[in-house]
Structures are given as C-alpha cells and as structure tokens.
Length: 248
Image (tube, rainbow, N blue to C red):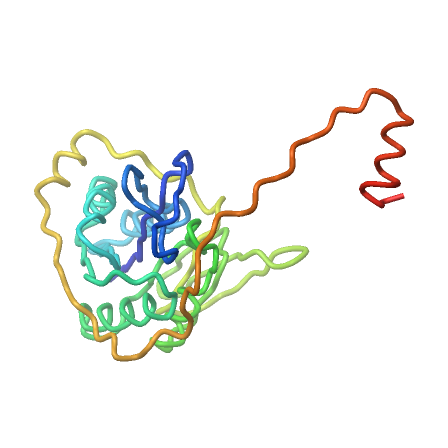
C-alpha cells in the first residue's frame, strides 16, 4: 500500500513576525520554522496505517527549498520511509496543489492508495490544497477528518460539519485532510532521529505552467489597538458606553 503525506512548515507560534521590505512575504531572518501542526496529525495517521498494513510505505512530499530539510528529517524520525522535496518557492494554494499533483502522479506512476494532509496551514488558514488536489487527481477528498478506520480497501471516516459530524464510507483511493483530535502524534525517539540523518531526500521539480489563480497584493500587520481606559465609577462606565462606544 502506498501512502503519501503532504507536509509544509510554518513559523513557530512564539515567533514575532516582521513583513519583508517588498510587503509580499514575511522576513524569515531569525524565525524558527516547525512542522505544520495539522500536517503532523496527517503524518501520524499515515504511520498508524503503515503499522497495521503489511508492506505499506509512507512517502512525504514538500513544496519548498532546502530550509524544509529539518521538517523532512522530523518526518523520517517519526517513521516515514521516503521523502520528495519539490523545489519551488510558492505560497499560492493552486500552485502548491498543482506541483503536488504532478509529482505524486509521477512518483507512483499513477495514484497512491491514500493521500494525507492537514486540514490547513496555520500560516495561511485557507484550507484549499486538499480539495484542489482531489480535483486535480480526480480522487475523492474528505476534509476535516476526526476519525479514520481502514477495513481492507474500504475507509470509514468521520468529519466535522456545522452543528455535528458526518460519517462516510469510501473505497480507496482517497484524500483526507486531518483535523485536531484525529490522533495524538508520536514523539521521535533517539534511534529514529539518528536514522533520519542518513536517509536520502529525493529532489524533484514540477511543471508550473498552469498559472496560480490568486496573488498577494500586500502583506501588512494588523493595526495597533487603542490603549485601554480605566474607569473608576459605574456612572463613568455608562457615560463611556453611551457617548464613546455608542452601544447603549
């Protein structure tokens, strides 16, 4: 069984972000990047399937540059078998999905049995790549998955919907995007980290002739909030709500 996992990296949530001088990207100097948390759930689910299916292999795919190597090494340390780095510095969702689709199809000479992704990148929160990948590869894509069980070639999934959950049964192949709660990702052990240093990362390029559908015009930080005001009496509070905030 061939299992593909699409990974990206995001700035550490503790990092203080600065916008680059061209207002198009963040300034990465001094920023530590980590494996996107939702992708970590996706990788863990693939590794659990690998552990239950004899002969299954997990291949991770990243669209980026050599700065992604530590993220890929972490995936190796967790238990991934192979890795492909698609050398392209794009952040546009369609470009990422298109690059992944082309390289995944070529890597497996067709389609893998399951493609796992996180539901979204916490750097962009657009949640588009999984659905786009399903359309490009003509595979059913189930998004925001909170429970997954494999019975032979039949997948049983539960996904979040507004006001409840939805239960689905789908024959492989399929794409799923992972939500928090799907599993508890494992921590790499020392043996895994040592083996990860020796594994080869295959580098590929992708046909990017299909233009992206959107582009950034400008990145900017949110405006600073006005300083708070301390009021000493209820009358002052009522007056402020009435005359300044205009809410009563």
